[in-house]
Length: 108
Image 1 (cartoon, rainbow, N blue to C red):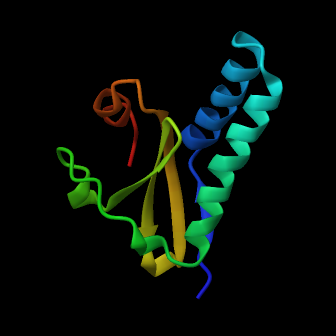
Image 2: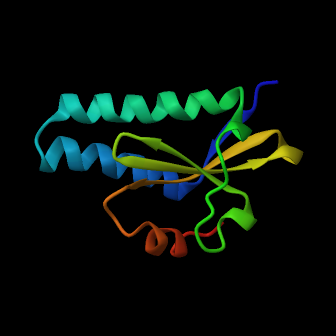
């Protein structure tokens, strides 16, 4: 069964900011493009088996069904909504940031 991938506005903004930071601040646009491509490849892998990744057990998040995939230095956070046959990409966060703080500022 193929799942539909959907993005929250925050996740879209996260990906855009990742690209812009690597491209315009670090001044390596080729690396920015490749990083974003790796993130999208990992997200596309969820179309087939989104439940393969374990629940994110930090604080309250596992009980809300939040799952995570590491991609290089980033974490892709998502929720599987079986009643919608959808995978919602909630956030894409740099691993060096305070992930709990970032998630606490997210509407799930």
